[in-house]
Image 1: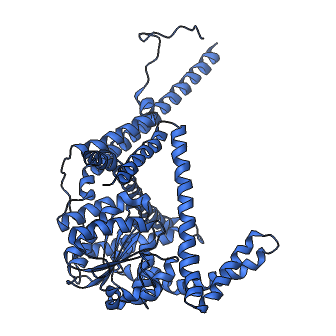
Image 2: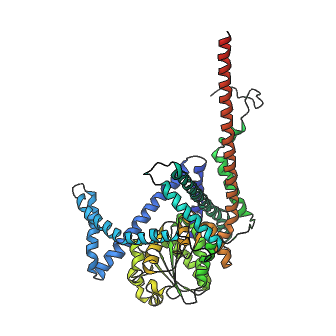
Length: 211
Length: 309
């Protein structure tokens, strides 16, 4: 490891502890670390987006390689910047309209196919005997869950009688779903804490030993 | 300066704090310290708790295992430094598995914050297995607009990425001469903390029939299960637990396996806090009801005394 790596690790350790200090209460060390993160991130992203989009994808192909097909796209991109003036902001709508139309055109059919039609197929249970019994049972539960939740979100009739009882089943499925989601969220947050602790208790001492 | 006398610790007049009140008002800093201790101790003193492999992690492993030496695989670092703790173990384990089987890797990222992570992990794992950039693997870098990138890669990877991350023209990279579109690539693996796994399914899987596996953060895993159930995803890993299961399957110990003891202890503690919080809630409700009954009874007695007089 070179000396700059060691310095980097120590800066990271100090900043980690500064961010953790918020758990006790708000303080200047936390504020300094937070502002540093926001400032560095903003600078990094502006430069990165500008280089990746304007230089690499537009300026180099057009001005160095003579790919003039990219010019209309570049002009549309420039039109969006006209939003900065109140007098000319209406012109930017043409660029946005083009972008929305193109995005919708290639996204809507694919989303309908992959997110709706294939997912609907996935709720149809297979024939008994063609799959293991636990997979069949799982498919039946998925079907009951989908139907009951859809009925819960059907608002054109009062949720009384049979409709009310089915929507109660739907609520139960929703609650199980939210519970699973919450459990996974806790796992995700704890993982981030573990990552910082692994850095503080394992990587940092190793770096000290290698100095 | 105040001259008020401090109350004595042995002041008998001070009322004792009821249990339900204590449970309902635990200082959040006590919870933070308890979680920190429960997480830190197993990292310092490992417990080596057993880990059971899930069906989805096994499917993820099988998808790479069935590839032959020389096959090509696209690997996408779809995350940024905020998710390194959860997703780095998956990326490292996947690349170790791929390089160990002599699979050629075409790496890229859909996030501007991804190249730093990708360069570090690719460099470390490639050095472990003696792989060279250009022939055994390539890193194409970051390309803006993920949807256009995903769609155009189905036609030509070289056209989508005219140069790699190090400004070498794609036409000069030997690996890209063998594999220039999805049809020439056996598998696509994405490691992500956002909905990008779904978009790979929509654009690369739906439009081009590409086989896809995904490593996801725990939060995203819930949304990914339906795609695994329908077969749109051939396998997936969920959170640090998924990474640990996969590390166990490939037989290498990484940050995933090392972190699972801490994860289990922290979860156990959180479950205890949830149970204690619920006990406190129930006791407090009972206490309030008893108080209301006593107040109602007192009011009725007073009314009765008034009538007698």
